[in-house]
Each structure stands twice: as structure tokens, then as C-alpha cells.
Length: 213
Ligand code: GAR
Image (cartoon, rainbow, N blue to C red):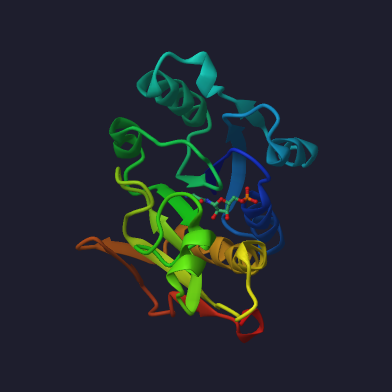
């Protein structure tokens, strides 16, 4: 049974999709803890209601990034994690933190990386006039929103899309993509070779649902 620790800063809808898939699909894993840098994170309250251990490590209570990351890692490591998930965790992590969880730290980002890393993803995609957007689950490396890609979901842009409509459809894709990628990880179906992630059974690492087009 693998231990998953999930970090979030807000709504926590991706965390919910992972928690629910883990339970309904009977993964060989459990969500051991949900940790937030914000006490008022909506996702934290939901996790607590499910009986999942929750904790807050407030970044404002620490002098610098290194001190915050050390406190965060101490809290995470209490749960002996095999896998740590960033699920809307809006903090830049230090190299030391990323190295500590090397190969067992995943993130989801609402774009087809390496396009549009960072904030205001959907606005920038619309401004660029791209015709397809999506979401990416990747292994975290020290560079923000970069790292070996585990899986991507495609979402075509519709002519009338604004930022809100696009974000909403990409989020639906995220809710399918993150559980899929995490399930592969906990079932040991992934291999990291030469900076690329390969599915050992040759499954497609691209998700495309025509309904989201
Ligand atoms: C998601 O869209 C996620 O991809 C994004 O924050 C949102 C969190 O929503 N993450 C990033 O932008 C990371 N760079 P949620 O709290 O409902 O899961």
C-alpha cells in the first residue's frame, strides 16, 4: 500500500478527483494526508470531512522559502510518502525540496507544457490564438512547471471561448488526467528513462475526449 500526500492551496478539485478514484478504483494506495499552506483552503475542509489527516504549514510563519520548505517536508515525511502530489499548490519550491522528493513528486498544470508555464495560463493561450490547449501531469524538477511529462490531455479551443469557459473545460480534463497518471505511478507502470516518462505497458499517455472539444 503506497502512501500519497497531496499539497494544495485552494479549491482542491484535483485532490478530490484523486481521493475519489483511489477509493472507487481500489488503488494499492491511500491518501495519507492533505497539506496546505493556507488554513482557509476549501480543499482542506473537504479532506478533513472525509477523515483524511490534514495539516497547515503557513508560509507566512517562516522567514524564507528554505525555512518554509523544511517545515513542509517535515510535515510531509511524517506520513512516509511514496508519492507527493502538487494539486493547485501555489508556492515556488526550493531546489532542495524538489531534490528530496526526486522521482516521487508530481504536478498538474493546466496547459500543454512546455507551452504556457506559470500563471494566467488560459488568458495567454487565448491571446496567442492557439487552437488546442490542455493539461499536463509531469514529474517536478527545480524549474517551475517543467519536468518529464507523464501524461497530457487535449482540449480544443472553441471560437467563443473566454478564459472562464476554457478553464472550466480544461479542469474537467484535469479531473480525468490526474487520477489516471497517479494510478499508473502507484501501480508501478511508469519508467523514467533519459528524462522521459514511458508507460511500461505501452498505454497511450495522451487523453482526448471529443466531448471537451
Ligand atoms: C488547477 O487548474 C491546476 O492545474 C492549477 O491550479 C488549479 C487548481 O485547481 N495548477 C497550476 O496552475 C500549477 N502551476 P484545484 O485546486 O481545484 O485542483
